[in-house]
Image (cartoon, rainbow, N blue to C red; front, side, top):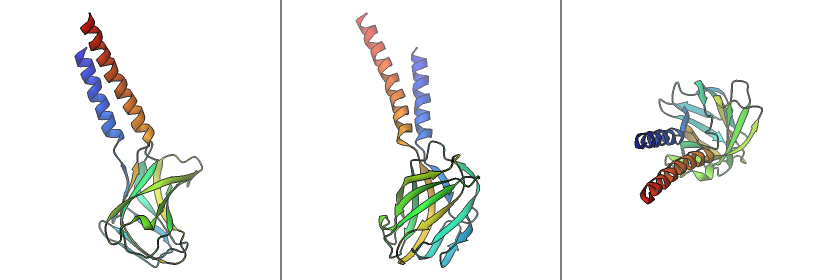
Length: 190
């Protein structure tokens, strides 16, 4: 019986480790993100980053990634790691697309970045159009300011697991521990 409980413990711990990992949607360097449209003034790509420079008045950049990324169960938030040196404090959105063109929007703000320092900001889920199939094939950055400058050097974009994933795994683990505890208690009384 102890071997079964130990096996279940190791299995649940493994599941918790897998479920808690952020999913990399895109590294922004060469070969990881291919620009398909941009209304920014300047776009520069290096081996590890993609930089956009321009203004925040309805500007956008869209691009594709080399192969679809499955973000099932990881759609609650996104994390964008970037270095920001612009003057805009306006809001922006990251728009994820599947192969059918259905999209999922996430909200962020340029004011969340620390100027001139690589910063990871959390983007909150906004909305979804169409039956998004959780396989990201491309994404875009959209700005909504009043013309202030934007200089954003993007490093990585990650999908963050939903809290319900943690809650469900935590409940299962708590159930196993309680069963093990009460079983020991009943053996001690006998």
